[in-house]
Image (cartoon, rainbow, N blue to C red; front, side, top):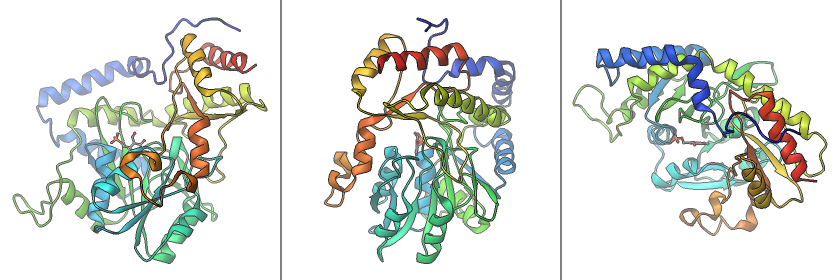
Length: 380
Ligand SMILES: Cc1ncc(COP(=O)(O)O)c(C=O)c1O
């Protein structure tokens, strides 16, 4: 195996990605500066229209970040203190955080051990008369099983708020063959443009999607101080905007999103092949009805000391991450009688064995070879 690589290995190579689009990005940023239309400038509207077209969705409402997107969605849907909102136990804290912040009750349920996405049977078991919404998280770049989730929501009259922060660009295929973009199937979809996301800007950013025109108007109002017409505030809202500079960057990067997903898939296929049938590595499973955009390449280590492996990888200049080391139900802020670790055996297990390897749009074969052969050697 090779003992080193020329380039510094990173979890996400934003610099390498920027170099390829530098001329276009620099000029678009300069245009915004020249125009001084920093807030709600033309770039925001243009990006919004481009994203609507790309997603085949009627409305995109840009906002300041993915957490705000979730919060604005929940505020707009009129969820009230005490309402229960079901979401995945194995997720980033933001999903549960906004539920708690609004005085709603987060009801955490298990995920599938292979796809890492929310388990529909577990959702069904958790539904009570107080349940008002389900928040499936399309984790690591793959869609949760939306067809049965939507059927369940319809049966119980629940909103579906898709957390698509990690899966923008992914496709879900329904049993009738219809394909839909991640985030456009539920009542609303909420995404993040955090720099390391598959469509990341150069700061914070987010968006909400919906096909419901009346709801889109309310979402816009809540995101803009609850304002219906200038200086008229019918409801309490928030101030959450996507900066024009960020929109200008996103407009350029959106044109490359499918090519970025293809590069991520190519890297994932390399890892898959290198780790196939290894007794100590469980490669990421592919969900039946979803494409994968590989926001993360997350494998499971079997019978290996994960921390030691991470240290040994780091000693070879190979970064790795654990998403997520402490599950939401174990966090002090979310502890409750229902959130006992014993109720979440799968999430508990995943928190001990998942390992995410470097994954981005600029991975080359030399790097992939170095990372995979190093891990294989360390697992001997
Ligand atoms: C699953 C998930 N939901 C929500 C968010 C929140 O997005 P942001 O950081 O833009 O607020 C993230 C970001 O890491 C995420 O991964």
